Length: 369
Image 1 (tube, one colour):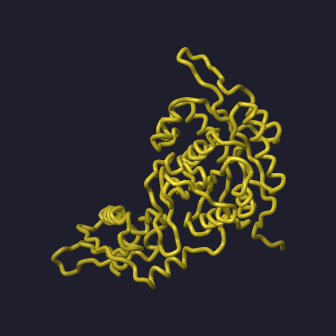
Image 2: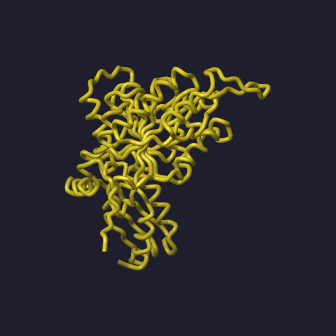
Image 3: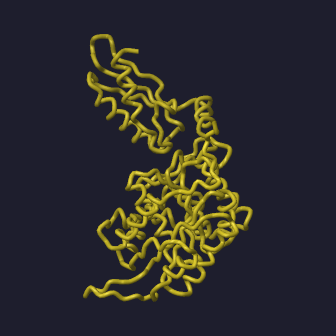
């Protein structure tokens, strides 16, 4: 390999597959790098790239990123990118290197914080809180994934602007779509969203298990689960499949919502999980004259936090920017970061980011002398 070819190889190591989120050089996607040495085109480089599947939806992105990376190498005067497809053997080797037979986030040594976002009842804005906290964490530089575990009432794809997005399959592996730096998976990406889902407990459990085993999230700092309301099958399955997960409870100030939210948090005494805090949504509405009105009452969030002996992490106002962001598929912390709701949600995500993680029950991988 010539000196220029080695420099190009180093540059290609900075190019990531947009779905797998690992360097293409690590994934065996760079077939060859050739410098023209005939003297007719000095410094001209030909790079051969192998896509994982025929018709890869992001092939244009990969080709563009490869071209830009190679052009930036000193001494390169031109580039040709040849695009091919991996052989079945090459694809099988890639899948084998990526696939895990167990749930990686269930390993006590996993560094990923798994947080289930729960509520006692529907309609409190739990999914909206989930996607805004996820994008808020991603905006801080963390690697974040979201599992839309609310199988019957999935809404995360629409809230993240992924209404028509479909995961890419590479063999048995599923590559989740990415929005605002967050990897997202939802049953809504596989089914006709206009048809109701009529599944019983075992099917719900299997769907969640498949999301956690077959979807390639890669290394994450945070994995957020948008749980369905209440303490039913999915909540129980999540606690069984992810025994080290934590819970964030969402409520409104209304007493009726707070009472059932408290029960959703108290279920952790049976599952062994930990509640990390409470978020109060729709806390107040600011009027044009600057005064505030509380359409859903006051104090529900603090009531739940006191009952669960945890912190009220924040109160989110009721405002049109939050609703509009959800309808447009752009979380308010990204679309309107100066709004009061966005600032409240970002402050909550910052608290979550710096919250200490307990070591109880975790293997530290050290041996006594």
